[in-house]
Image (cartoon, rainbow, N blue to C red; front, side, top):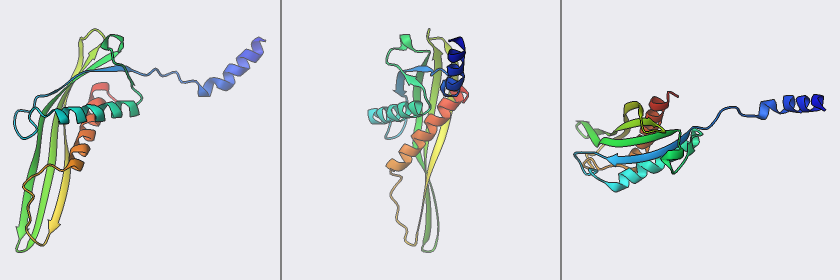
Length: 164
């Protein structure tokens, strides 16, 4: 009987996962952007939250609603968001580079609310357009660039906080 049990465990061993998921609670996301059109923008905060939660799930973190039952708590502050434009032209040739920049501050807390680690992540998403006519869009924010820079910021933030 014991031999059968040991043999069964031996066969199942490769399929048993010994790693535990980290239970994470997102305690707060605050928009602390001081300048620009996204200052205090709730849609940016909501969009960042959704992308961050999606990223955490992809990385096998267990998301919990109650911070009391979590191993870790995350506090996020959106610090800076802007589009930086660079234009260059020669005669009728024109090149425009728009960089969407997002700076995010993240704090990792333990289950008791004590700070474990704090980090600042700054990421950029570039959009380059070239044309033979000089046409400017005036530094408007491109939705694809916003999504890209948020995803990059989430990845950098979580890697820095959890050392992954």
